[in-house]
Image 1 (cartoon, helix red, strand yellow):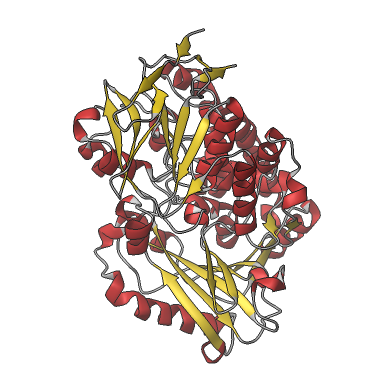
Image 2: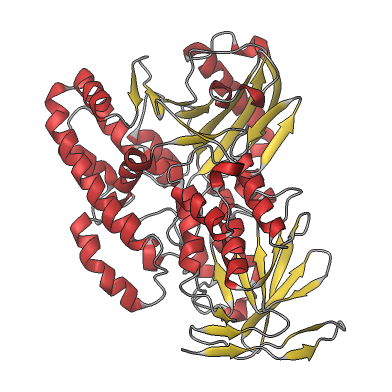
Length: 525
């Protein structure tokens, strides 16, 4: 096993710090009185999970966050007494969080209370009918039969395929770094067993004929930035993940989990420095040696881990001469996930018949997704994800009120939409649609409001093209074909989060931090 020995050296800024030796292929870092330093860019779920794992491995970890509070896309907005989770709203594989607390010698349940959702989602169609989707096998069979009894046998076959995808794709590949071509070659038989060349929608359609059931069983990739008509059917694993471990919400909102993760780091002496945008990854002697902040400060490091959007990281933080694989051209030619328009609002009344999670679908499915993903055209119609967390936790709003967020998938910035000019018009159209469908009297009882557009994702979250989830999870943009957890271009640079392997969603970004452990140099104590 290779060993990386760190020897003290005096830097130009006058502080003693480890010198930067040649990077090992893998192996160990020999601990000296001064531990090796790992800088983590970004404090989303992936960055915080990576920071915890690096700290446990023996690194001195420093986390830098662009925003004024931790969380990244899981940021929390507080406005007029209402609490809004900015991004993720559900937890589907809680054991990945429990692992992080266990690594720190603590229990997740001591810091965060998860509540199981039932239903997981209500999928409401444009004609007013709906499907309540949960983890109870008998309930699900009854719901399927209510729409199309002849599809029951096909539904059971689809569950078998989804379970196979979970076993082979999530359990077998989720924490594999896909660092070498040989990793890809070894995984090919499992890709073949999953039929991964087929789209998820085509897999569902093979088993079920009812159009509404096809929608219900295929919409899940939209939760991680993928078009069900294009992403690999391996993402049927999401269906199985939910049935196996349930769908949960955190009391206090997802921000309570971010707070808990930051608390673990604080107890380990790991600072999370906010209002500290990283504007460059400095590379010397062919390897990453630290980061430069927007204020001009240089922070030396032995390794750098970016939890930022990977396309943005390579294009804007790594100088072109250091990029042989992730060139500007390759980045531009990628196919990126959709953008997100998210409207956060609070009401002076409660809508007690609205569940915690609801899909409010418009009249089109395939056509709308073609507009979003292929034509990059902002359509007049939309389908919405409506989140009412006060259905579970009334403390997220003033007494007698409701907290909501509604998310509309939209094209990324290639649509050319002038969001600063058009956002209010779009928000008003969504309000009108919700009032006519599931929230009667809405516009009269709105007491607080704010929204986020793809332009905000670009400007505030530094997301390339304002895409909500990085590269779309197509087959040839997944696993080995996705940006690697260990940079293909820069020794000493590593990446975690939605836009690297295994992909977006809370389980995905937490697994990316777990995969990181397999390629990061270990500290020899």
